[in-house]
Length: 423
Image (cartoon, rainbow, N blue to C red; front, side):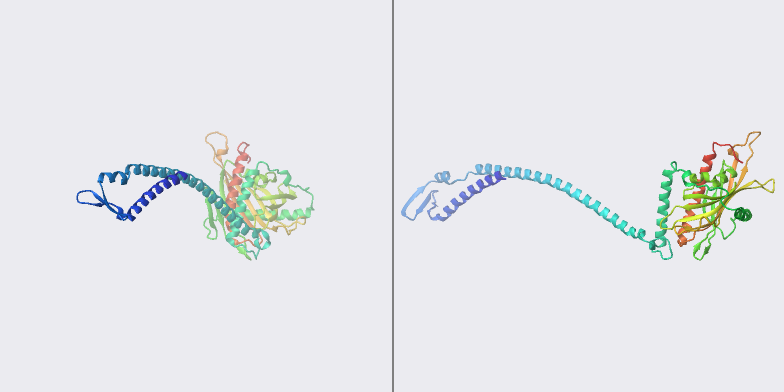
């Protein structure tokens, strides 16, 4: 920049000198020679009356401008200016790129800050849901049905993920407590066993009836051999929808399915909704009373259930009919486990009814698991209690029951694949 100033100053100074000469010449016009017809010039002088005659050639030498020198000087000055400007432009471009990078970083930093702010704001809006009972299950809950369902579904998904991760590490012994079979009197035991007979006969009479043509039953899920029906029933605003599912599983017998469903030694291998359970009383080698606490699914309240579980083989009255195995679970009361304020006591009446169908192999070949088909009928009548929205309960039942049947039957198939056939 200093170079430009010096060169430009020199050029301007020179031009100023020339301009001064022109001005002086202009001021002294009277002294400037005038042209004469013969080609000479006459110089007038105020101080003298004499006239001097000058030739044209003599004037050219003293008053002419060096245009070539001026052009070279101007060209050099212009080249210097252009070179300096080019250098300045390069510096500005580099600075622009640097500032652009800094601007991009600042924009990205601000975008991340805005995203974090929005996430924090969303989280803060959710926190009141956890802050008090008004946002949990109840008649005065401030959560609408859609928010309630979204929260329940998110909690169920989280439970499923945790269950998959901890399946191999779960300890069954730590979650079971077996009490002596003579905890209660024989009178109490007889009362429960009498109820067992009533429930078994009821299920064998009504649960195996076909519901396909009954308009009261709605088909809600159909996946391959599995069909799930539901009948909508409400009582005092509480959903009591009876549910019935039919399924067919190859390679397992009805005895095996019922055995793994009833035996508490395998309960934690396939049941993902249970937090803990205890065998309260052993009524016989085929009947027990169980207290079971289910995992809480926020914002719904935690549930527990106290029920008798019995396994029974029902002999066929017709030689063409297959033998039937049945597991029946139904709610009872017990002095040792009254309802608590921590959980809502649910009421259940559940039956797993299994029949084994065999397709005889050709010739004298032995029966293998490829020749066995288990026909399953699963019925569930559940009173969840509490004040959960009806739409949420129905949506959860539609999602969870088919998942349970597929998970449980797959477990039985894997468990029995290398074992002898258990009829």
